[in-house]
Each structure stands twice: as C-alpha cells, then as structure tokens.
Image (cartoon, rainbow, N blue to C red):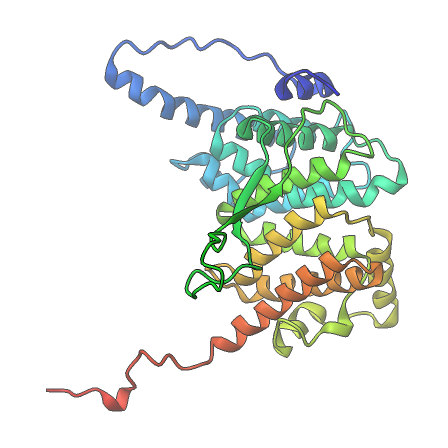
Length: 372
C-alpha cells in the first residue's frame, strides 16, 4: 500500500498539471489589512483562474469577471458551462496534455472553496465520460488527475477515517414499550452502520481502485450538492441512464406523473426510428459495472434530486428516469441491495408527488375565515 500522503500522491501522478506557487509580494501590516487580505487574495485568484480559462474557451461574459464574487458568477454562468461541457465531451478529451483538464486540476488545487465548487460542478460530466470510456482503453490521464485531486482532498479532510452513523437495534422492543425481560437494558442499544469505509492514499488509478476513487469524488460532490446548479444535476441524471445501460421505460409508472415522464423521454420531434436506434445504442455503449461503493453515492445524489427541499420539475423528472434505469439494471443483475434502494427511492418519490396535492388539515379554508 502506498504510504505517502494524499497530496504528494496526486502530485506524483499528475506532475504535468502542477505549477509552482509564487510567494505573495504583499504583507499585511495592520489588523485591517490582515482581515482584508484573504478576501482580496481570493478575488485575485478567481480573476487569474478566469483569465487562464479564457485561453481555453472562446468567450467569457464580461459580467463574470466584473462581478464582486467572480467564482460564484463563474459557477452559475450557463454560457461558460456549455462551452466547458462541450470540450469535456469531445472524443479526445481527458488526455494527459489536455489544457482543460490542466485548468480543472490547477483550479481545484488553489484550495479556494468557491473555485473548488466550480470544478465540482463539472464532476458529473468528467465521471460520466471517464467511466464510459474505460472499456475502450483510452488514455485518460487528465481525467484521472482531476479525480485523484478530489479523492485526495476528501481523504485529507476526513483524515482517512470512515463515515458512520449509529442505528438502533430494531430486533429489540421499542423504547416506548415495556420490555418483557426487565433485566435486559438492550432496548436502546446502538449499532454502527458504515456509510463510507476508511480511505487510503492512492497515487494511481487502477482497475481495482477506480470505483472507489470515483465514488469518493461523488461523495464530495454530494456534500456540496446544495451549491450545485440545476444543469449539473441534470448532467448527472443523464449519465446515470448511460451507466445503467437500460432505459427503464418498463417502470415508467414509478416516481413521476405522465407529463413529467413525457417531457424527459419525448423532448420534441425526432427523426423517426433512426434517432431512437441511435439513442438506445448510446445507452448500451456507455454501460459500466456498478459496485455498491459507486452505486451508493449515486443513489444519494439522486435522492437529493428527487426529495430535496427545492423541487424543480425538470430535474425531478430526469432523476426519476435515472432511478428507473438503475432499478432495471439492479433487477437485471439480481442485486438485492440495489433493488431495495432503487425501489425505495422510486416509492418515496411517488409518495412525495402524490402528497403535494393533498389538503393540509392545519390550514383553514377560505370559507371558514371570519372577517370583522
């Protein structure tokens, strides 16, 4: 096992992405200057990142660079996101000398949280393209360097420790009922459930580590999902369908009403059976293996898209489609854990959609209001 630190491991794997950091020429000489220095430094780093990105994509709207918070403006700008996603989806993207991958790696290594969110915004596309190409043995050193940077960041933040929760032992009587055996006090005994196992520092992406590295990167994405734009979550739902290799249309009654399903599955007029055949071929060619260490964070992200506090109709429909596809895949693979998880998500989503139209018994109807 590699004993070097996560940061050193990533630097060794992606040497060509590393850039020496210049010492800061400004020294704060007063408390006021010391307080203002971090904000100024963060803004200047954001401007430098935008300037270097301008050499890769065609245009960046002036409002992004002139914003008081350029990193946040860059995160939510649709025009820039479309250009970057288009470059990531090109046939020869992800190579070791790819300038966009270099920019993503360097931007994340700035350790500026707003800029790191910008990189995380494109993780669904990076992971989607990367995993779909694994079977073709293409050189994807650029994508792997970015994924290793995310993995290293999460490993350092967690100190390599696992993420676990305490669950009550359901085989014991409830704490609200009297136990038949008064001598035992196990009614409130807690059991440890591991959500994410402990992490080891990795310097390379091997076939045995790939699912774990991508899964941890998705766990990091999930921890910041409230900051992610809707478009990023839609991209993630799209690649879930591709990864599953099945369209899940047989379960179209689950999770969304007919209008939502129609909006996603039938976006507009198509060119007959040829377009339908191409779409099915696209789904099948991107099919990947789905071990639990990868599928679990995928389902957590879909759970947020389906049951999150802010409901977006387009995102909800796309997430339902993705969940149905993964449910079809789990049935095909006869994976009991995945079957239970995907079917539970679909059922919860359907219950949430049905409850939206139910009247709230705590609200007074208009006819019962007395006007004085």
